[in-house]
Length: 316
Image (cartoon, rainbow, N blue to C red):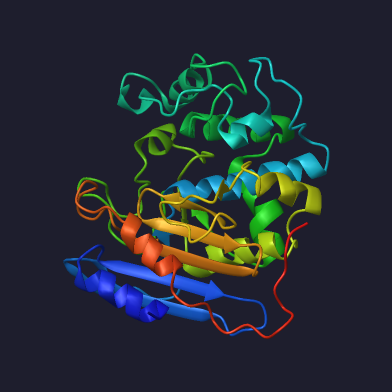
């Protein structure tokens, strides 16, 4: 099934109101597809420049920034922090911090107080002892990057990712431009992730709005080593920023990538050099309505554009 046909099938099954996808392979034309509208009750069509709420794909951008700062000596990924974990462990979800924080429910706290409560969250296991996917860990990683540089995470994103790639986004929300609807009760352009939204500032776990082209540019920059050194890429592709061989939706153990709760995904194949991006608003109008796992897998298994002989690459 081609990419455009896959999106059309998802639209027919009402898995989302709109979607955008980009797929590329070395030496082959880039394949692009869009489908649907900004909401089930909004006929405005999704286009190649539509920005979706990227949710946890934000973590891949954050990890790229953190690795870039380590390359210039602004951060040491292996030195234990005052709390005992390393920044590398934050990126790998092995810091011991809890998975989530309920500070967003604390309407009596100011945003800065919510952030501090999250940063002070008690460890649930010893650093390095176990894997626990942690949004708190990525908020902490983003905060440590800001603390080390005196710059906001949005500024660091521009310096180390979007400017080198010649992009104008992704942008941290809230955003004013027309964007796809997410869940009923979340205004358009407001970050869907409650934790990130409650901080009212750029956060390392979620909050970016971006186009499929912008996410694709990040993926290609990582695969083609235009953003990170070989050493940083080796760490990122070993779990410090990218998930490795997730059997629930990745075609092979060699694949790398990440998903986002709103219905987004980035899939990289470092063996063949392919990059595939899927952005949807599957949480519209209700987060519990759709499980996108099967659809992600079908999109991941769409044939890649034909690749000329000799253009694949295998990591050492």
